[in-house]
Image (cartoon, rainbow over all chains, first blue to last red; front, side, top):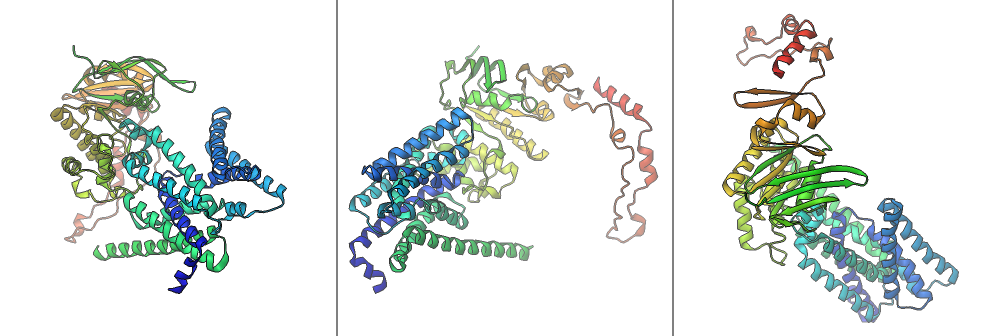
Length: 281
Length: 313
């Protein structure tokens, strides 16, 4: 028990844990829709794009959220324009724009010759240095997105399942897509410092995929994914504290372990079901 | 003359530089049951998308109930897309898939109301899928999946149903059942129905009105009037044979002046496995006689040619 409670004596751990749990739940929630839309690598691309903005914000001493947000928006516009003007496919455009943006970030860091804590956090995720403002920002983004997903649940479901037919049924799919893109950008920006650029994609993909192995219903898939996202974030934060490893890595490794357990479980269940069928036949 | 439910005036549509539809003039009236026929790439699905408001014509106008249509889909038309158009592994039960049809009409709450669930239950019962309500959509056959899409459209309580190839990829019996179900919905509920199909014989037997499409409307009318070799040749760019017998119409593309024996003059010989009946009497063994098979084969191509030309009259 002391093992669990001891870190709570530290202010930084309490805020870090809260931030981690919220970010885990948020990524678990949006991740369900991302996985079902077959866009698993969008989180990866977005976080890399935003990293360039974070680096620029760092050297110009501008606000991190402002810099990252503006940069992310610019990257999205650039991707769209590249696709439209040069008639190249969206995945190639995402590849070019986001890696170029990441390269800008790397160039800035290497020219500075000092690897500050904030930027290291942006790369690998950290339990340290969570300000109360950051927790507030994460809390607001999480609540707004959760309320949005609840209110738009039916529209999101139909749009994700079959966009064109949803439109034929009068669903305003463009608005739904806009809400979704904004939500995703906001989630990536507030999650970046806790999970890290390179690991955010995993936190978006692993919980929903694990949940999918365990259920055939979307409502349950969301529930499992959100719970798994927040619990693994909690475990990851403790591990990060005790083992002194970047929190992004501990969270993702915890999720991977759970995924493997779920994969094993679902394989056994399926085999048992097959065995039962053979038995009855 | 009443105002058409849907009216297309000189409508054209192009994808990039390819003209897919040209000068389409079409009226659909309340309670009509019409089928759009044409080869692959004739623009059938594009025509449906124009009527649904999913795409806008590059030329011409589309009116719904006499009013010019804007970008948003007209509310009272429900769409049944092709079954293959979605990922059937999507985490969804049959009931949830059906209830999707209430997305626009329902409340902002994430779950359906009791009335909506009862309505879904009634419709699923009518379509014979109520027993699968709690099953995952992947666990259904092709015909049952088609019924799920149909139920999803009906729960929106539409005035008109637009269906894209509702009989594609299902066996003949299921096809027959689906077409009879649509006829029932058309007659009993007064729902206007527009569907596409590539099955000419099913169209001849079930549709009171057919529209032959190949980039533009080649002909439209009752199957009796429209199903002539000339119209069908123009639609399918092929050589079609139309046989009329006992009030039925059969259509077949003429084999290119060959019979199966012209194509395979020396097939690898095959024989049926000997079947031992339950009684065990060796007298009843079924064995084909290679001689009789050989005799059944026409001697030359002339016989088959004359056979075909007779049926073409």
